[in-house]
Structure formats: C-alpha cells, structure tokens
Amino acid sequence: MAAPQIELTERAAKRINAILDAEKAGVMRISVEGGGCSGFSYKFDLDEAATDDDTLLERNGAKVAIDSASLPFLADCTIDFSDDLIGATFRIDNPHATAACGCGVSFSI
Image 1: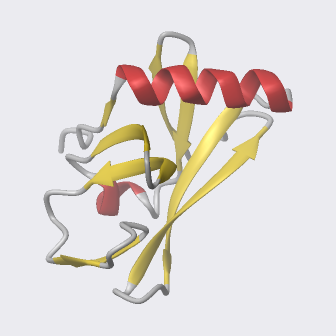
Image 2: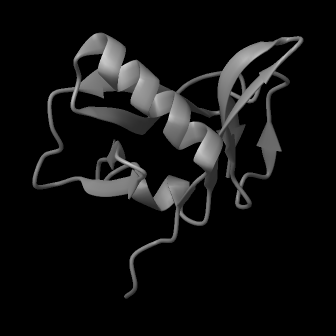
C-alpha cells in the first residue's frame, strides 16, 4: 500500500520555518485527536525531532512529523497557512472530511 499523499504548501512551509527558528524546535508535529465539535480535531505541537513511528514531510527546510495513528486521517490533505483579516492560522483541507466546524479545527469522517 502506498503512503498517503499530503501536501505542504509554500506558505505553510515558510510559517513553519519561522516558528521552528523562533522556538528552537526541530519539527512541527500535526496529529489528530478525538474531540472537538465535529468528532476529531487537529493538534499542532513542536518537538525536537521526528520518531521512528512518524512520517516526515519536508518542504524548503520546514519539517512536519505525523504519527502513524494520525496518518490515515490526514491522507490526501493539504496543509496551508492563511493570514487574513480574521487571523493567522494553519488550515488543513481534508477531502475525506464529511463535516467540519466553522473554525476548521475539528472535522468528522
């Protein structure tokens, strides 16, 4: 079985690099947890390094670690960064989500 495709946009990579540099971290970790108003929620953390269990995404030096339990929920997603009038945030476009909350942090499949 092929590894799920996950896209990290140029905007997201630029912002991740800025955060990793400022916080002296090695990777941004994105995971999926149960909870949130739509069933699952995305969680963003900083970590020193990826583990052997992680899938590591890289773009322009930006490193994102995704654990094996979260990977199926993020299959075919696009990770982007938006900085507009309503705020600056990472956005995950998940084509498999059947519903999402208004803020885009939680979803259901």
